[in-house]
Image 1 (cartoon, rainbow, N blue to C red):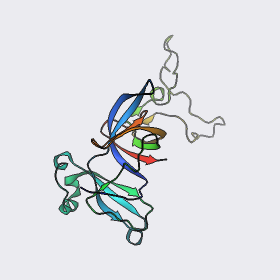
Image 2 (tube, rainbow, N blue to C red):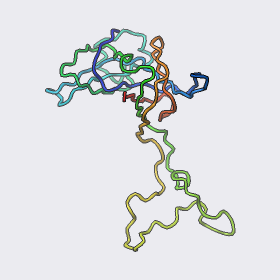
Image 3 (cartoon, rainbow, N blue to C red):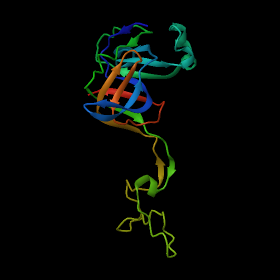
Length: 211
């Protein structure tokens, strides 16, 4: 597949996991992000769609070694794990369907990027786990061990203050980590290493945006 140039705002990847590299006589924790198996599947134009963007798809592993075919676009769920969009500032998008995005010009060693991902879902959690409440006494007959306590308003108006920290869904939310340094770019394996941790579990999709 050939690579085309397009002024996109970022690139999608898949989190592999964390490791460490040696730089300047110290150990640096890094997150490995795989940028392989993404192909252009469509173009969004201002006249037809109201905005400009490049649609890309992540090819399923069983079809990753095959040559792209336009027939794949008729059954996207069969051939692609997920379809994403990359906004572009180009008035005329000069890119072909089936090509790949050249991320080497977007991600350079030493540059700063913002990484967006979906945090790990922890399910329904109480206030101690979700917000770090200390909880009540653990002995002497108390029944307030992990209870949230009073949630009433100070003026007793019968309402709960908006934003009150209560039990609920923990995790599985979109989160951004800003200003991560690109430590290494490996075109041979289509892998980029960024300093620090990024949200999401291994195998989840993350969006890398250049600062």
